[in-house]
Amino acid sequence: MCDRALVLPGLVPLTASNVDAVLGVHDEHLALAAHVCGFEPGGTGGQQDSSTLTTTVHEALLAVAVIRRLEQEPQRRPAYGGLSAGCVTALLAAGVLDEADCFRIIREVNSRQIEAHRTGRSGTTLAVLAPSEDDARRLVEEMRSASVPSWLSVDLGGGLVAISVGDCDIDAVRARLGRLGVVVLDQADRAEHSPCTVPGPDELAGILAGVEFRTASAVVISPLTGKPVDNSPEAFRRMLVDQSFDTVSLPRLVDGLCAVDGVAAVDLIAPAKSVYVTRTRSLLQGRAEHRLLTLAG
Image (tube, rainbow, N blue to C red; front, side, top):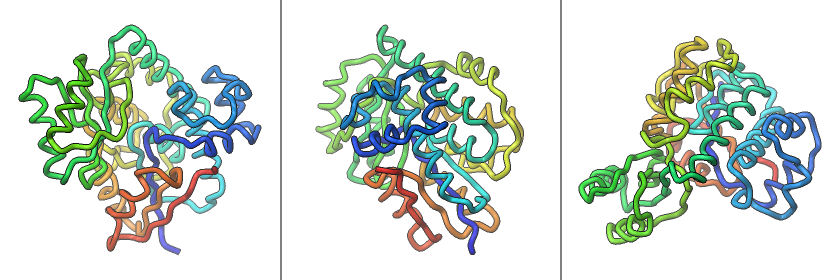
């Protein structure tokens, strides 16, 4: 049996079926998520996808789904890597965080983002598909040349990226992207992986200082550098802060997992229809074995 590393995705959309599958099982994971994050599982309603939920509840339900799916995988994994919100569940899987602290981080970060959006202090993140990887890399420079404060937030490879923009006319930004031949796939009302991200570096560091971090039982790869994170509580805290304000990259993450000694396969845990499915499979083609661990629903 080959050693299999694991990719944990960011805040991917959940279908109504995914949401119902999480809420339909009343176990200790859902009870803990509801208690820590302050929601009533029976009050979210049925047949609703994640777009109808607050980001706090969305991320908490995604974490519950991931935790349950991991319980079905008894084999020890030598390495984990997460993108964005997936960094928290990656640290949980590697034994750095316990489950309650995982949900606590979700609550504290998302509550501040929601408040920032309510008071108009946050930017916007656009998921876009550019004609090529080179075009995707040039996007930010072209936007900045038009005096649009913008940053490359997430790179999934193949021209699929997320761009964060500061306080500006978002309709004008979308129109400009269209003129550049870029397809806008999704929009989030918050800036991610950029200097505009809320909570800021000092506030996020303060949140994490109140959480117990441990040494890891496996290698943890940074989505920022593609390198293993030093196995110390402070290094893991630093990784969570650093990756929140700069570009995270799925290609770099996959490269880092493939480079871990003994790893011959890299699996992905995600909803069946997530964009991560095709992108991860493409990045691993001809390099390593791969399996999709589909979330319930």
